[in-house]
Length: 568
Image (cartoon, rainbow, N blue to C red; front, side, top):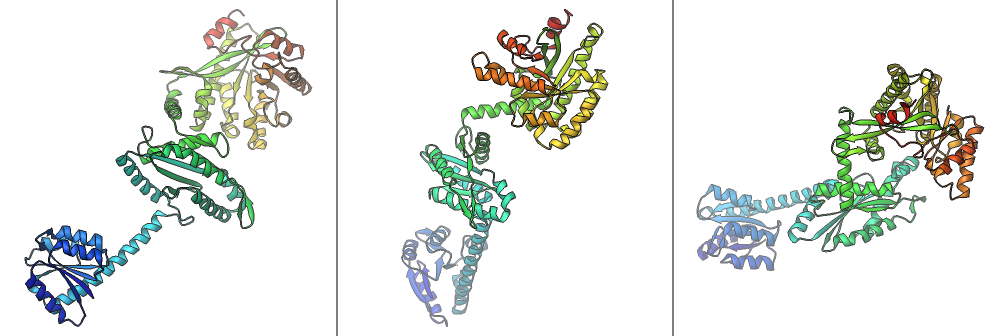
């Protein structure tokens, strides 16, 4: 067994060597009379054990113990020796990595041999324990399917990478990738096939990602790449494009061809994202925007996107209180008889009177309300308010004067379970005759579970309410919807009206849509009428009602009353 003895006292070294010579274990002892020489020897050759004097003229024992461990490694056992008995010192030496602590006065052949043997065993046990710990850490930090870093390992590595970027003032970019329609692969081919596809995806990404970068799988089909360096943000876009292109060729999994792409969101360390959670959040938002644009898209998190996100958060926060604080308003736009010009009804249009931002159009807040699951409550309020307002106006008009009110339904409403009850409640509480209520429904709302919805709409129509198909002509199955649902009114989308003054094909198409409504014996309403020429064209081809800025802009009830109802 090769030993290194570091002690500045020659007499003590001689006594220790003599004691070791009497052991039944063969020791080959190399001497060093100071810390510097001992450290040089450890760097030059391997020793099974080191006997180290705590007090040396050129080095502190604990500091030298740390340096020896750094150079020799855990495979070398260390026995500390000292002339002075000090329990605190002994404990500190053990804590710093020594396997034993002996007093020089107690050194003899049996005790020294036993201490070295036990120290060697302890060092071996410590090394085995460390290897086990490393294996467990590897299991904890790596994905068992792809062998990439998992979410925990990624978060640990990202924290270290961020700390390094801060200290060196370098850039860091995070790329978040999410596979396109991976759920479809699982649903069609099974989860085992999906898992094998993920392994292939990980292999392709690994071939593209630079060696000095970080690649991890942090979710079912989510992968993340971290780039660091002076031009990380500039490289990020090129690398992301390469990653997306790498996923374009067909995957052959068990001889089954599979096509899969991905979208990516990119966030860079800086003012907009200054920590690991911020980076992931920003990249996730950018990824969401990329997916909104289609397949194989990428999006940077930018100042403009940050402003949009903050605006959305501002809207979402206010929306949760808007109903309770009575901030919603209904505006009304008239629908006029195409031939007589008489007002026959109105459409109720929602606005939000925000306390700071003023009047907000529905396009700016309804998509957020849909995400928040607020549409049932909002649409119920609109229905109740519109019916009450219309009934109030009817009571002020001449007896027998009819005036209908159209209310928009949302595809995000729970129409199948709540619509009939909401309609009946609004009619009952307002006293409005059912035949004066018109519900406008878009084709998007008719697509999901059409049979169940058709039953509900039939029940609504049975109590006398009129059903209108909004934005007619823009959907893929408009004709089928007119056939399968109890539709009595077709609202021709304004896009078909807008181009008739310049385009012959647009005129033919609008004429065909009006004729279609006439052939099905349903009422036709032209939206977006802005010029007299458009109105005349619709009139000439038999359109029943006209709606648009030529006749009336959406306006609050007080103005609508003054302008259109008081004269009557």
